[in-house]
Image (tube, rainbow, N blue to C red; front, side, top):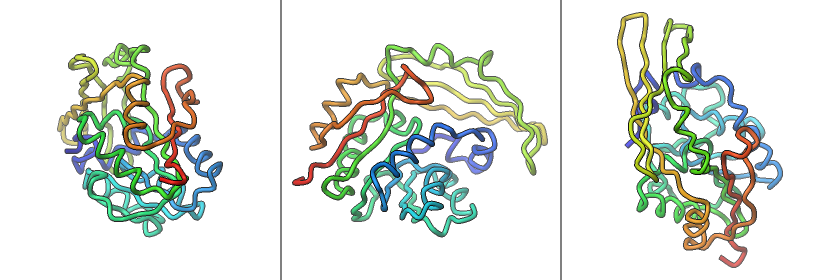
Amino acid sequence: MADACFGHPRLAAIYDPLHPARGDLDPYVRLATEFGARRVLDIGCGTGVFALLLAERGVEVTGIDPARASIDVARAKPGADRVRWICGDATALPPLRVDLVTMTANVAQAISDPWLWQKTLRAAYASLRPGGCLVFESRDPARRAWEEWNRESSYKVADIPGVGRVESWVQLVEVSLPLVTFRWSYVFAADGQILTSESTLRFRERSEIEGDLLSQGFVVDDIRDAPDRPGKEFVFLVRRPEAG
């Protein structure tokens, strides 16, 4: 089930204007080039920003996301016909053979259910060609990122064309490790509507993630620092073995 910020039509429509700077995607674009990926599966593609960046570069992309409203936003963008869009989670994937599977931003942590996480890794493995790679990031629990999730540090006002003035902020709801729940609030000045979106992330230890990957047959090639959050995140680069 998608969080409201991705699944509610009014919130999905303002997601990109509220997050215009997506420099966090640049390392993934570079990795796709580094791997020479011609076919990519983007799990948790959201409004399609990363999928379209790759498609502009001639990459054949499949984007999948459980939020219908976000997929609708993606499909309405210029160049969207270059991407194959699927509404669903990774268990709904058709047979694929891609060079690279990605889960950008908080996608891996947003799959908080252990059963679905294992199913997602299994689906990623099945979608990769032998020798193909899976890349994703996950925040280091030791850095306690949630301590900065409060109204004081997150409050902002955006004037969005065609929408008007929107206020937004985040508040921490509960910390029950490994799960952390938080709530975004949005106030639309045009009509006074207030919408909220509650999300839960799973903060997995590095060793837990490595164990999950190995159990699904992956080879861990590298664990890097996230360029946009140095010292705060793990970036996993793993591979389906050539003989797998």
